[in-house]
Length: 276
Length: 276
Image (cartoon, rainbow over all chains, first blue to last red; front, side, top):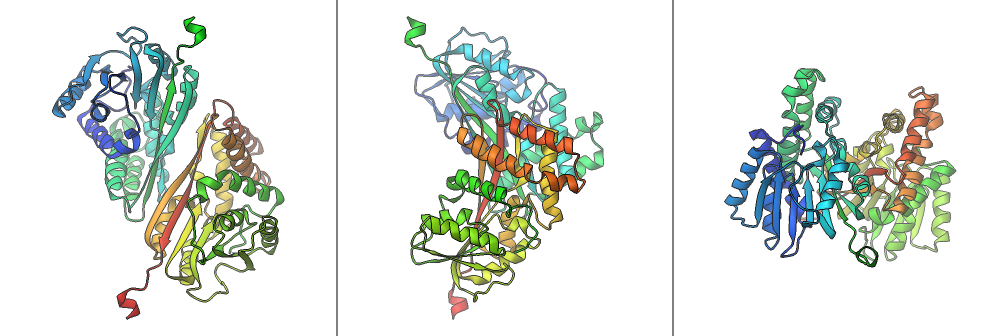
C-alpha cells in the first residue's frame, strides 16, 4: 500500500476512523456477508476499524487482513483481540507485492484504500489475481466532492478542497468514490454493481449530526489544518471560517450530505472453455 | 406561483419534464399514496407531468391541481384526459392567493415548485392553512449543487452554475433540495422527515444514462444556453465545453450523480387542548 496517506496514522485520526466506522457501520457493512468456511482478504485494514465489524458479522469466515503500516496492524490486532475475535490473521504487506499465491481467496474486501493509491486500477488487477475464479470483490470509497450542506459556504468548500488537494499531492484521489464503477470494470471484474450510500444528516437524526457531521467529516477537515496552511494552499482565516461553517451545518436548521460508494464485482468463473 | 421561471414553459422543456417524470417516476413517487376519499391539493402542477402519476396511482383520491400558467394547465388537462383520469380538477391560481377555504384538503403535494419561489417558507405556511388538522404535506425538490460526475469537468460545473445563477436572478433557488427539512420545520409542520432520492447513473443502468443524464439533466443545462450567454455570465465556448463534458459522462466509463429530496410533514392534529 502506498505510504502517501493524508490520514490514517495519528491518534486523533484513528479515533475519527473508529467513530466513522461506528456511525456508518450499518450503512456501509450490513449487507456484506461471507459464507462459513470462505477466505477473505482485507486489503488495507488500517487500524482495524472495519475488520472488527467484518469478522464479528461473519464468524464462520476466515479473514486475512493486511496493511503497509506495522503500527496500524498492531492497533488492529489489539482491537480484534479486545473484541474476542479469533478469525482474523494480520500480515504486513504492500498491496503491490502481496505474499500470497494466485487464487488464494474466495473474497477480497477493500475499504477507504483506493483513495490513497496513485495506481488504483492496477491495485484492483493485482487483487483480482489473488481471487479464485468466481470469487468476489467489495470496494467501499468516499468522495469528498459529494459533500454539500446548508447553509452553503464558500469557505467550507475551500477547506474541503484543501483535503482534496493534499490527497492529490500525496498521489491519491479524495473524489474516487464516483469512479468505483469504471475502476472495477477497467480491472476486468464482471457483474459490476455500484450502490451509493448517501449519508443525509438533518437535526431529526442527532446520532449522525454528532457522529458524522461533527466527529467524522468536520473533524477530518480540521485534521489537515496545519498541513493545508503550511502548504500555502489556503489562508488560515479562510480555513478556520470553513471549519466553523461546517460545524454550523450541525445546528438545528443545518443539513449535511455525503456519499460513499460501495461496489461489487466478480472474477470470471471456470467455464467449459477455460477448464477444458 | 411566481412567474419567474427558468424552465417549465417551452415545448422542449415540457418534453424534458415528461422524460424526467417517466424516468424518475418510481424513484420519486412510488411511496406517495393517498387513501380513497381523501382530497389532495397539487400546488404547482405545471404541465401535469406528476399529476398523471399521482392520479393514476391513487384512483380513489380526488386531486385539485393548480398552476399560475393557463397554458401549462391546458397541457396538463390534455394529458390527464388522454390518460383517462377523471379524478383531477384543474384551476388557475397563484400559490400566494389560493381560492380555497382554510382546512380544505387532507393532503398537499408540491413538486419542483419551491425552487422557483422567492419566498418558499411563506408558500409552505400558506399551504399549511389549507390543510385540515392532521393533514400531510409532501414536498419534492431537486438540488443542482448535488450534481457531480466522472470525468469531472470545470466547464461542466460552470455550465451548471449558470442554471443556478439564472434561477437566483429570477428569484428562485436551484439548490433548495437540501433545505427541504429546515423549510418544512420553519413553516411549522410536525413529524418532518426528509428522504433523499439519489439518482446514480453508470453504464450498467442504460435507461438512466439516456433518460436522466442525457435527456433530463444535460438537456436542461443545454436549454439555458441562450439566456446564460445573453446574460454575460459565461463565455459561449466554456458553456459548450461544459455541455459536451456532461454528455461525456454518459459514455461507458462515465458516472453521473444527482439527488432529489422528498420531504413529508404533518399539520398538528386536533388535540384535547385545542378542541376543548
